[in-house]
Image (tube, rainbow, N blue to C red; front, top):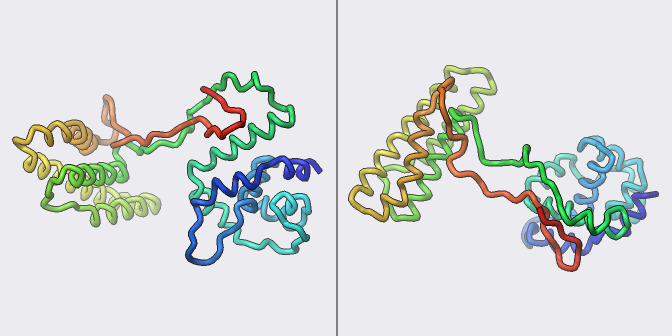
Amino acid sequence: MRTVQLAGKVDWAWIDDEMAPLYSDKGRPGIESRFVIGLLLLKHMFGLSDEGVCERWVYDPYFQHFTGEEFFQHTFPHERSDLSHWRRRLGDKLDLLLAESLRVAHDSGALRTRDLARVTVDTTVQPKNIAFPTDARLLHAAIKGLNRLARRHTVRLRQSYLRVAKRAALMAGRYAHAKQFNRHHREVRFLRTRLGRLIRDIRRKIAGHEPAEAAFESPLSRASQIRSQRPRQRGWKLYSFHPRRSSASARARPARPTSSA
C-alpha cells in the first residue's frame, strides 16, 4: 500500500523530461522511463537483485502499479538484462533518483529542511578512471591520451597504434581471465613497446617547438612513468593517465530542496 502512495508523490513527468535526451527518434520504441526508473527504485527499496525485482513484479500488483501499469500483467514485458543496459545508459542521470528521493522525503515530512543544510558524502567507492599500475588498460589509456593530444596540437604521428593497442588490451584482459599469463604478459609487453615508440615519435616531432613542448611535458612524463612501472615496484605509482572528474553531489532542480556538501 505504501508503494501506491509513493507512486502518487513521485514526479514522473519531470523524470520523463530529464530522460528525454537518452531516447532517439530512430529505431524501435524504447522502454518507458517510468517502468525502468520504477524498477530501479523498487530494487533498492526492497533490497532485491535484478532477477528478484523482475520475478516479484510478475505477481505483485503494487509493483506493477508503481511502474505505471493500469492492468495486471501475467508475464514480464521486457528482458531482465534491460536493467543493466539502462544503468549504463543513465550514467550520471542516476543522480536524478537521489534528487527526487530527497524531494519526496521532504514533502512527506520524513526529511526536514535543516537536515539538508549540511551533507557528508563518503566517496570511498566513487568510480574513477583508475587501473592497476601495470595493467594493460592503463597502457592503452596512455596511448589513447597521447593520440588525442597529438590531434589537438596537429602533431602528425608516424603511427597511432590505436587499432592494434585496442586489440592487445582486449586480449590481455581475456588471457588474464583465462589464467593464460604467458599470453597476457606478451600482450602487455606489446602495449609497453608501442607506448614507448609513440613517446619517442612525439618528442622528435615537437623538438624545438616551445608551445608544443609545454603542452606535452606533463602527459609525456605521465606516459613514461606508466610505461616504466613494474609489478612489485617500490615507490609511488600512477593509477590513471587522466582522472575523470566526477561529482558526488546530487543535481539540484528548481524550486526543490537542494543540498550543499
